[in-house]
Image (cartoon, rainbow, N blue to C red; front, side, top):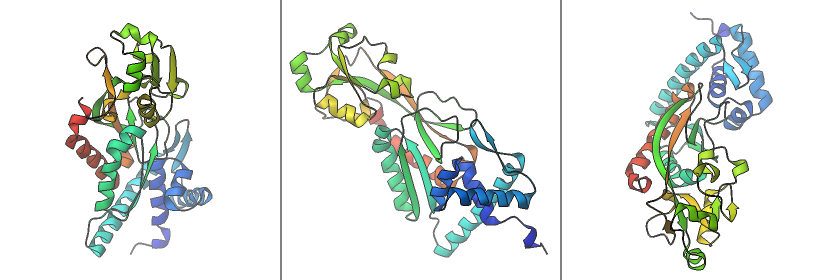
Length: 301
């Protein structure tokens, strides 16, 4: 018979698993409804039980040691067994717990949100937190289970999953077009006002005006929110470089140089390997892909 008094705590193993997925004690504490101090104490207790360190701090955040990786494998088995038990008890395969995702606000609102709502409707005991962030894949532990990011992915510690490409195109509002006219050539942009991201706050440089190779405009209206940019273009602030999926068919916005200029950018889902083994993350990625597939025409314009 196994002496259970000498076995590591299953609760502490599951805490370590959550740390491995989210990477930051504060994020883990929020997900588990406890405190940073409690998480630290549980990890130290597990280290004592296992006779070594399970985590080490690196410039990229907390990383698993070899012992920690073995412990996470055991924790995943416990999580799977508990999930199977809960499914048998409730006679369903519903997911439970917390799923945390970061995503650009525009793509997140248009595609990720309906996908996650569908997931939650099918799994009513699953909590979802969606954070708006327009950035490239984090080199450090990000505090989320899954990142949806724009542009090239350059991280050795996480796995990228290609979701789709989309187009950035130029648009103007009717009032602006009537007041200022529309450019007939790219060089004419220099005579117009422009709506775009705040360049100094932009992490994905491909989204900005400076990297677009367009001429410098007379003036600019810049915002960190794509929704504010769309509203600014509607209100006549200038010509905007907008995702085409943010300008649906029937919109009052007018295409500008539609055949003369566009940018195509990829969108990826990025997560650590231990997060990608989570059933909730797998279901979320599948749901986002399904949403994209069902509405591919909105991304191909």
